[in-house]
Amino acid sequence: MGLFDFMKKADKNFFYVSNVVTRYTGNARKVVIPRNVHSIGSRAFADNHNIRTVIISDSVREIGTGAFSGCKNLETIIIPESVIDIGNFAFDHCTNLTSVIIHNGVLNIGAYAFHKCSGLKKIDLPNSIMILGNSAFFDCESLESATMPKKLIAITSYLFSKCTNLKSITLPENIEVIQTHAFSDCKSLESITIGEKIIFVDTKAFARCTNLKSVIFNKSEKERILQIRMINPKTRLPVTIFNNNDMGKLILSFESFAYCENLEKIVLPDKKISFEPHVFHGCKNLRFLEYLRNLCDTNGININYFL
Image (cartoon, rainbow, N blue to C red):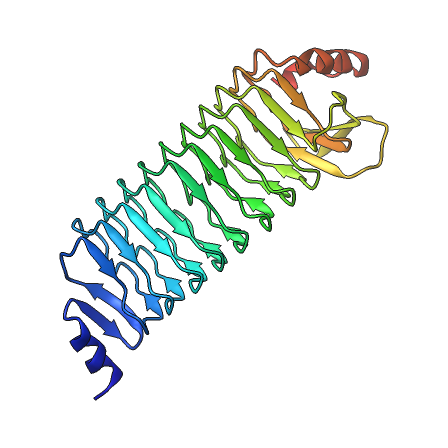
């Protein structure tokens, strides 16, 4: 008797290819992934509206693309330390998912993995994670807090975009890049602290965070700029306008903080800063603009470049 025959007889609702679950046809509310399964295949459980709880055995190493996508009544998922990869769209549109426990061991969470999990309020991501795919938590509208893995160096595009109830998040100190729209439309986010290793904040990374009041880089309390390098809109080449220091560089991209209408305080790091146009567009309450305006007047810069 081969492995395929044995496993199929163990539970007639599971279909396998080797050690991969390729399809589940049951209607149980609680599903336990059998032992000796190494991978949950692409869309193996997708659009099953009966499942409430999934327990994954400690033999599973991979959750495939869209494995549980559209399981709209799924409420609880426990991911053991044996799993190293959660695929793209793995739990996409699991709208009633409220409890996700991810044990230390996962290295990668794919793009859109928890997209539109509108019932999820909290996520604690283990320190083993190296990569969070773009849009992994996009439009998780009930998400209030997230604990981030310490080894992460990039916040990918749209990672928490439209998490409209996200109130607090602590970014790891190793973060170097915050990509486009990473936190856009996080309308409940009030403050953010960004570590000293940051080198690039991309286009509209914090756009329309309408309740954001404070942005602090590197835990500094010095409201000053050591260098401004502006981007010529026609040539797309940088032009150094003001410079008194040779320290590392930070790039704030186009409209990276646009329409943060309640933003009052931004404390920039002690390093060169390159501004693309309209970084603070629509930030009508930003006190820092008074300092920036004086700096612009002194150096013959049009303040509207930043607005």
